[in-house]
Every structure is written in structure tokens, then in C-alpha cells.
Length: 421
Figure 1 (cartoon, one colour):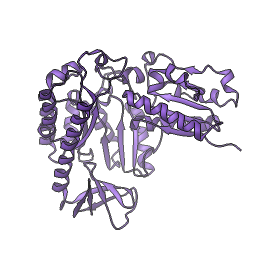
Figure 2 (spheres, helix red, strand yellow):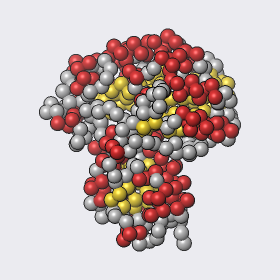
Figure 3 (cartoon, one colour):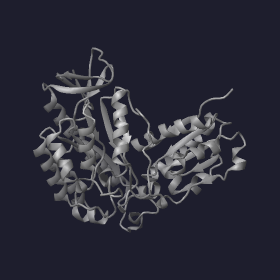
Figure 4 (cartoon, one colour):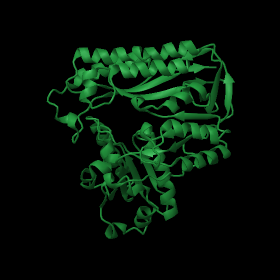
């Protein structure tokens, strides 16, 4: 008896997107009875979790070959190749290639015909294909990868070594894919990438992300909602600001890669913005679009972070009026410059600071929810009883709605971190 491969995804939305591509590639290759783990390398903890997951999957699937891929496999292939549970390690470039899966699918003895580690130098990759996964996500929202990799070298981050340098999917390919998604009934498309605001730098005429957004909205007039995932606010271009100001179909929710609120720590992180740049961007965007909400990534306990530095991060939450926080307790990542900084903050203090940031974020969420009660919203239904507003706020419904449809409703109350209608 044969079975389709089992896939486990760890980490970011882009990884989840690429898992869908691997499912299609492995299916086309006829791969059977295998387990594929798509790993994350963002922190040392993420790698530890990947190893833990692999051991668990081996216990659950004692006979199946286990194939490990993703960012952790790319950055430290030897770690996974040394595990008895692992059959094969493939890199981030290899996992998106049909021939890789054809080779793996050759039969139960494919290990004898393939080296255990297939991980090439990701820095040599100069293009990214538009992986045409028409409709990954819920039945209401689709994700489109428009960019991969990162040219920046933040001192805490291993991801460029897992993803390579920045590569962009040409605008025409992106537009064609979104047209197909709209034809299939999707009411919202989310643009994703590793460093989204660097989109276009490697394409002819070096277009900007704002050019892509304007082009999508112009050439796909039937697309009701376009959403942007995480961006670097210092790289936002004039056309993107214009889209924020003039395009109601561009959703008023931006997730910002801020990382810290103190200038000295930002400099030690090798970030390209200062505290005032972040505040100014949020003020300008909200001036153009008063209903704009912001999420943000913030790291607690970066090496050398004093109480005063941390207070600047904490204060940034209110200064930028951030709503949806992703708080990362700093963890030492071997191979990054930050790991070599001698003044590491101790673990319990990092944990305490992360908790304080999360508490500040929770308070901001409650303020946001309170302001949303009693106002009409356009809500995209993710399932019959839950949808999201334009600002990505969850709304629960007692009466079932049609999944995938946009409904107009006025929330009447708050339950936890959700609105209720």
C-alpha cells in the first residue's frame, strides 16, 4: 500500500507557501511513503524544535524516509545529516526543483543513488520563480510569493544564509497569477516575501514595491482586497505611500520590521533606520489613511541592551501606536555577528522584558478593539463563524456566514482578542 508524502512545516508563511509547492512537485514525481520536514532557522530555538519534530516523526513513521529541507537545512546541513532519523537533507533551492523530487521518488533505494546532503551555495542563486500555487491559504485568502532572499545583513539574523540574496518575481508573472486567483473566486491576495520592500531591485528598470502594488490594482480591477505582509518601513517608496493614500482596495494594515526602539541598539543590529524614522513613517501613513493599523517585530534582550535601551523599545509601542506585536526574546544564533558580542543579556531578564513588551501589545490590542466596536467593517470570512476586518482584526459571528465572502457587519462586543458581531 502506498501513501502520499506527509509534510510538516515550521516557521514563516513563506515556508508554508513553499510546502504547498513541494506537495505539487512530489505528487508530480510520484513520491510515496515519505516524510518531509520544512525547517526554520530564525532562532537557535527554531532549530532545536526542528530536531525535536524529526525525532517525533521518526517514532510515528518508523519505516518512512525522512527528508529535511528549509532554512535550517540550508544553514546547517551537517546538523541534520548527523541525525540517524534523517534520510536526506536538501537545500532551499533544491526543494523547489522538479528534478530533486524526481530523483528522490526513484524508489525505496533512492538513498543509494543520491548523496545524503544536497545543499548548494544559496548565494549563487540569482533568480526566483513565481511558484504558481493558485490558492494556497484558506478558501478566502491566497498568498503570492513575489520575492525571496535578503541583501541586508542584520547582525542577529541568519536568514540571508538560508534564503540567499534578494530575487524578485517579475511583475507580469505576479499579475497573471493574481488574475487566475480572482477568476477562481479569491477575494483577497497577500503579497509575501523575505524582504518584500526590496522587490524589483534586481529587475530591469529597478521598479519598487509601490509600482507592483499600483500595477496589480490597475490590471486586476476585480480583485477586492490586496494585502501586504511584513515590510521594512525605511524602504517604502513614494508609489506605495500613494497607494496607501488613494487605493481603498489596499488593506490598511502593515506589519513592520522594526526590531528595536533605541538608536544605539538599532545601530548594533545594523538596521538602516533610527527610532524617529519609524515614528515618522507611522505618523505619515496614518495621516494618509487614518484607519491604518500596524503590527511589528520587536526583539527583547539584544546584547548590550540596558534598562534604558529597553524602555525606548517599550515606549515605541505607544509612540508608533503599534497594535499587533510579534515579540522575539533574543537567542544567540551561532554564525551571526551578534552572537560574538561579549555583553549578552541574561536569560531571565530577556524573558521578563519580552513579557513586558507582550503586555504592552495586549493593552494596545484592547484599545484597538474598543475603538472598532460600533463601527461598520468589511469582513472577509475565513470560516462560517470567523472573519477578518480590513485591519486584520478577527471577528466572530454567532450566525454562520458564507466562507470566502466579504460581509458588512458592525461588531457589538469584544471576546478576548476578537470582536464579536
